Length: 105
Image (cartoon, rainbow, N blue to C red; front, side, top):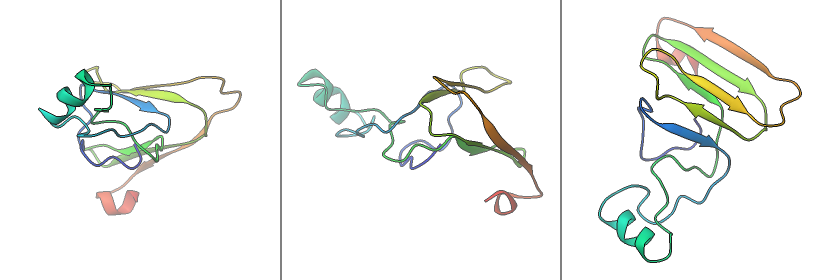
């Protein structure tokens, strides 16, 4: 999902696809909690300076959306992933598959 430094497995998360300040702690406790209590500067484990709507699954499938629109990637459902993009008038992308992650890079 872009330049994510804290979370590698997004199952159960909703990931904003917008440039967002990472914050102090980026979800690491108790630093993030303290920062959020004193000014809201704690950020989140899924905020990014370089969001990119692409990802690789554990089944060697990859998805890449060619868009600069703001959106959300929703990994909360057990057996599916959904993307929502605001103001997208055209959405293009690539679906990839391979024998391993390097083939999808």
